[in-house]
Length: 171
Image (cartoon, rainbow, N blue to C red; front, top):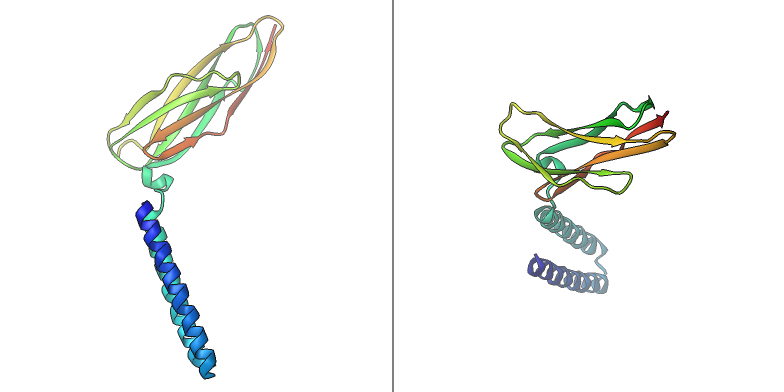
């Protein structure tokens, strides 16, 4: 990609130099209409080449990688009672490419991270994948606001869910 970028830079410098020459010649000849025609033609060529080149270098979009979205939910979201208590975090990964392999992990509000896990999406019958993590938390008298978020990696795509929050009050 580096050599392609260098070649494009050289090409733009050459085109800019030629535009400068065309402007000078047109103005010297007093041909404003000729200048406008050449300028429009040149502008079209520059824009077209930029669009085509930038499209070829485009990083694949999320949809191109086959992940449509990542969400996470805590259950229960509010808990009051005896502790420790187990909170269930459920993540949903929407998929649109088959087959594919997804790597994911959970990150918590206390800084802990789960090990990276892998899930396979075998065919088009699977529109979403559900993953689960549990967090046992709390001790007598403790009040806490906690969250977990799901991080999914597939190829060049890295997606993170909005944190799923839970509130816990221990008796």
